[in-house]
Image (cartoon, rainbow, N blue to C red; front, top):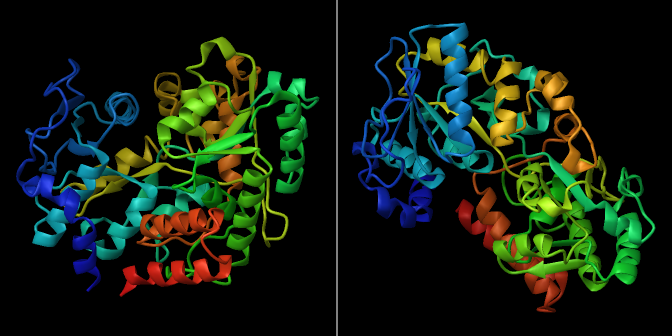
Length: 453
């Protein structure tokens, strides 16, 4: 029943990739077969897109030629130079949605023979797929990879029933980014916003708004990133331990909604409808800052004329919730080894000596991709500890790694995105006065439970 429901939920995207396991439709990549060194190859979806036949070669599905692709290519170069001179890594540019629909198509047909050896998946998506199709993935628990060196909160996304299925990649640790020049106008510094709770944040936000006219934060009203980050900062979530929805009687969720309502009411949180509007609220200097996954730094650093006027710190914590901290996560992805991999020993060793074992890898990809590790040893490297001029000479990279290590894990579910959409709609109803909060949450609980039938 659950597999049938998943098929229905993803039917829309499945239409464009019905033949995914047979080679795809050729909607990405340049078709280049070699980079000149013989180490990596990148092809579009019209090329070979199945697992390797063993030997010294591995194939990879991943996306983003500015981020994930150069990172995995660099890992291939390092492994070839330091471990196996005959190693070859074929990188097949595949959009995130296509990685998921290809995987599902293969799983539904019962034929995994055309899956790549290694697949990158978004952390919150993976839980759905491993729950319905565990046979598509390789258990990495006894692979020789030292998972204890990864941040616990990040590792939880790829851990199911006590088994490790993924190697964490990019860091989604939450940071608070503030304009120091705007704070200064209101009589505050970055230290005043460090290790505080949301009551103190609202107090400072009101003063900043009064003295500068700037909002403190902004966010999409229909996609509650801020509430999700608040929840995880206390190790809380929208789900029970068994993955079922927990919206009614969830004290932490109620506290988060109350804080959100207060920020909007006090005029310190600017609600927008679209992602582009959110970005514009930052780049057009409507807001004194933002709280989000650290990947938001790339957007902020596009504002070159503001260099030196930004600083980062941790996020505010809840006041009432048990286990409240100043640390959370938003976004990120992990590498998975498919059940089609014909040479798991090679795949295990490749991952163990690159993404789970190479400081050099993370140092090399940092300036070119901005990809920050959740692998602890990388944070001790010289590159991570270097002060960054744009960020008021803070050593932001090692700071982000420290934040990740302090982030609590929380319950998740195969239906994470579905229930998140339900609660986002419920919060909009609450904000618009569409009924009593308790009644709206009860309806949201019923709507969320639909996915579990």
